[in-house]
Length: 327
Image (cartoon, rainbow, N blue to C red; front, side):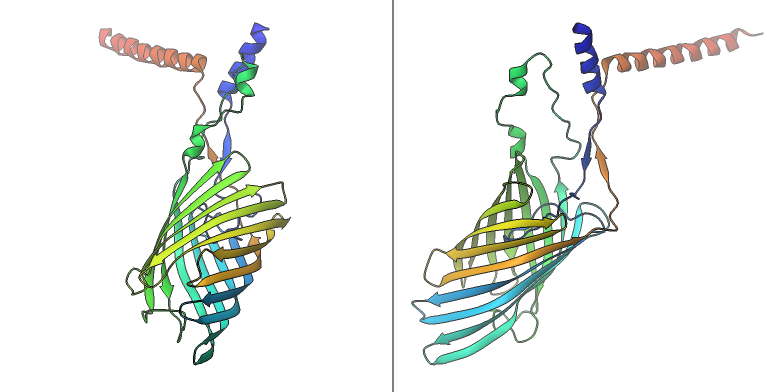
């Protein structure tokens, strides 16, 4: 029995584990939420995420109401290396705006943003798998919390907003403005993912604002997942808190459909929105990248290497001394 335990221990010590980099076998979409994940789609991978939505907005104090619809599209491309991603985000909206003595139709690109994201820290990279305790069944089957899950992946995002045409949804006339973001992502077990986006947007304009988007996603099985999301924004012109619930269904490994509904908590203005969408990934050009974790050193192998280096050093010393004694 003792010999079997020794063999198992050596096997675990000599085991080298592999971890995939950014790419996953199943599509990883930001929809149906508004947050952005810390991980990229993978080098050479193209991913499109789009949908349609309806929106109702009513302001009791200003006595206006706007009802409309729109569409949004996000195109993501993994460029240069695994941790880097380029993206284009666009949102078009058309609504019917009514107020005292005002009745008009508004339309335009509510958002056009070009940006790039880079993963600066990945807690899963070179992560050694926990070795089982060969002498304790209880230790291997306990449900104690793994504190390492509190360490998030961290990414940085930088982009520019473009104001295209005579846009009725922009407060400022600036054609270009910056956008920056810090993104964190935690994985709790195999079912829960918690993402936070800390946003600084349009800082060079009158509509400069800070924002936060926090998303909690739960995977129920291989097909279904659910979303709970909180979104906050604050500027000199507008401040609000929105709550969002949604669900996504995986049709194929590279195709996902989703639906969501959002609502804020005040009536200045009151906002209600709902939508559905589809995410699609093209990855035919992707080549698998492995990140090999460092394997623990085997004490026996370490001792052999040390002895071999010592013998080699002694041999060289003997050869030098022999040369010096020759006439």
